[in-house]
Image (tube, rainbow, N blue to C red; front, side):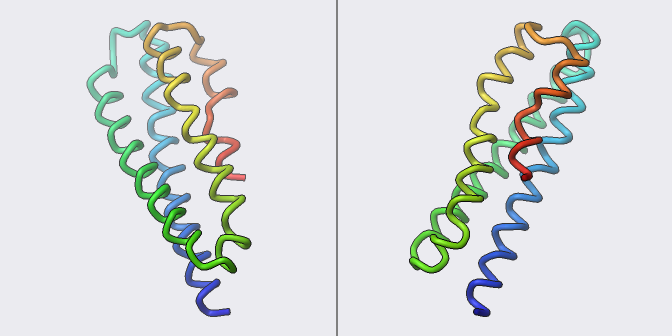
Length: 117
C-alpha cells in the first residue's frame, strides 16, 4: 500500500507541475494573441520549453510507474489521459502561432483543462 501511495504522490506532483507550466503558457498565449503576435513572442517560446520539460518529466514518471503491474493498473489510465491531452499542445501551438484562434476562445479550448481531470 505504501508503494502505491508513494507512486500516486509522485504522479500527482508531476501532473501538477505540468499543469502549472501549461497555465503560464496559456496566459502568455493569450497575450500573444491579443497583441496579434506583436508582444510576448520570446517569453512564449521560453515558456513552451519549460512546459515541454515538465511533459517529458511526466512521461518518464508514467513509464517508470507502469513497470509494477499493480501501479500500472491503478495509475496508468489517469496518467495516459493527462499525457494525451498535453500532447495536443503541438496542434494548439500551431494555431496560436498562426493567429488562427482568438484570445478569448483560446482560454476555453486550452488542452490542459482536461489534463487535470
